[in-house]
Image 1 (cartoon, rainbow, N blue to C red):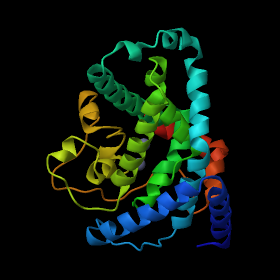
Image 2 (cartoon, protein in one colour):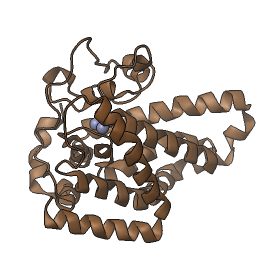
Image 3 (tube, helix red, strand yellow):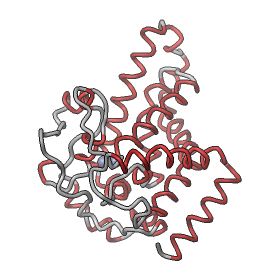
Image 4 (tube, rainbow, N blue to C red):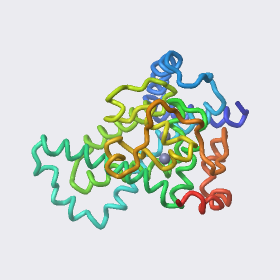
Length: 276
Ligand SMILES: [Zn+2]
Ligand SMILES: [Zn+2]
């Protein structure tokens, strides 16, 4: 731990305690849930207080404070040309047994394409590369997301629901589900979850998304069934990724440098490599 990471984490923690104490309590509770599970079923042996932990916790705290507001701004801005569609309030015309499954399908399609775009559009990759700089996988690492990357993917996830007139309750439900899934799918857990592994994102599934192995590149963007449909699923039997990370030179272990990274020449210099 560097002095600077400790200081930045302390500031983020104090601000979060004042602004959203609930989030701090939730993170503490998650610590109690995930640490024993990751100890019992570890995929790779690693220390709980690994290098970079405070940086990733800082991402978790800060994103919790700002990303929802940024997402709302992006959704409203993107939906401006389609506000006339929202005025029809399509959701209210649908029976719940149609509206709920439709929302689920739209959420998984939106999050898949949002995530896939962050890999295929060079400008978006500069931000998403921060997430792919994770080299030691665990539930805390799930928080390592540049706020702009996080807001963009979340906006893509809920935009279709917003246009069709779904209300705040639906967005809150999506936010809770997406957050829990993100924490779970990054966990340092070797369990394979038979059958379920092709239904919902498991650590085995999402770890391949972070693999440095060439054959796993740009795979597993979303739910297994959605990746199957679009030809990007990869989960070979009896194999695990050799290593996690990215060739894009994102600085490790430094929150402020990770925030700044998308705006640096180093990020621009990598563009030719990531657009394939
Ligand atoms: Zn990704
Ligand atoms: Zn991830």
